[in-house]
Image (tube, rainbow, N blue to C red; front, side, top):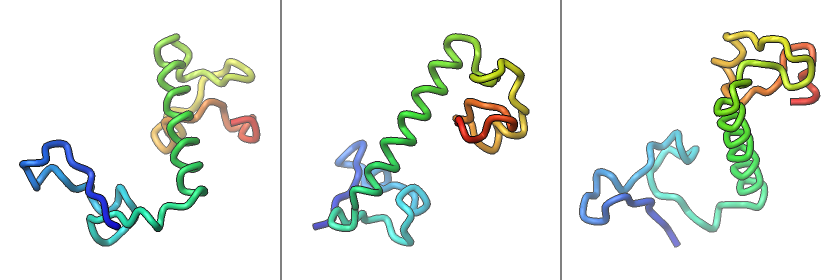
Length: 92
């Protein structure tokens, strides 16, 4: 069974995700190909984004959660959900 993600059912141009968003060379997503690992990865990413947004709201987004030093801007550009500096990568 194939599913398409639609914002407006009457507008086919908005009913598809870009291929990169689903990791496929086509726009249709075969639901039977979604594994528990895929779901777990998506949920973990969502949790990371939610935590980053909370740090942004609280004013400590650019600060290492372990040592309170600033996180390098280039590192945040590469990974916007980064919570720790280079000295504490294992705790990210």
